[in-house]
Amino acid sequence: MMDVSYVEAWRLGKELALRDQAFTVALSRLRKAIHGEAPKGSKTECQKQTRGDSLRGLDGLVSGLHGINSGVPPEELPSEGTKHSSLENLLDSSPNSPDFGEILNWVIEKLHFDSVPANYLLSNPRSLPGETLRFLHVDKNWIDFLIDGALSIGNHSAAATSPQDDEARTAITEAINEYLNKPDPTLGLRSQIPKYGFLLRSQLFAKFPHIAVAARLASEALSEKEKEKEKEKEKEKEKAAPFILVQRLLAVDTILCLFDCEPEELQSVIYDASEPEVIQCWFSSRSR
Image 1 (cartoon, helix red, strand yellow):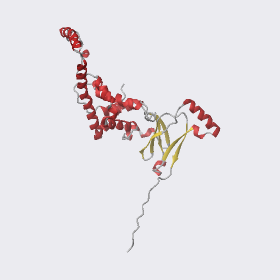
Image 2 (cartoon, one colour; image 1 turned 180 degrees about the horizontal axis):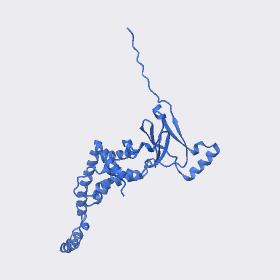
Image 3 (cartoon, helix red, strand yellow; image 1 turned 120 degrees about the vertical axis):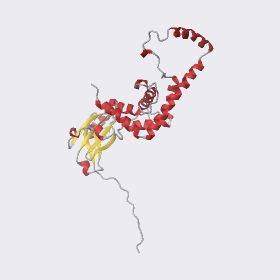
Image 4 (tube, helix red, strand yellow; image 1 turned 90 degrees about the vertical axis):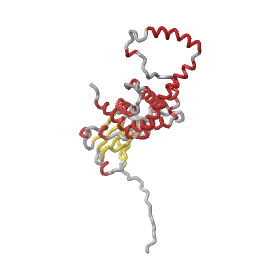
């Protein structure tokens, strides 16, 4: 049985993409560039062949014409959309493309659940009653369907009758995954993607709209000697502490917090109800 939530994620990704004009234009331009680069690659490959290679290929061409379409299933016949090596060359330079940069920024925002409606994140409010804390794992498959639905727009190729035939979408997805999994050359760090988090529902958020939430790990509540031991263990494990990437109000009394990894031991959740700093401007005038 197919999970209906994945279907809704794909539809939501397509709907969010169509709402964003800058993303739609950038994706259409990049698709056009990829499809325009493929014929150039075919021409370049033909130009590399010598006269001897062309003559030697005539024997196979003639024998192939005699037995054309004989006993060959339709699914094994060559399709119109053929992937060329020039497509990979285009993707190698795509990170420097402004269109690819626009698409990449949009995808990263959606990986952090930006502009995703709250009813998709919490379909049934009864599952989160008042004064309740619920932990969660981010479903990578759901996110993949969301991004795939967004990248499906702008497909005007007659050969791409199925998602497997949409080579432009596949190439763009591979380029995005390569960028996210490849460490930054200057910092040596990968992009932080939400993987774990919690939903918290409390009336404190309704009474204090500017309240902030922080997560305290178990190692932060230990004594100094125990902290030193924990530091040594952390150096051995070489694991970074989780960091809150997303802190978003889904409702007046409900907040969503997402980490880049699952914490080993979460000691407590801290509330900071301090009011934000407000810059006050004063005007003086002479009374008459």
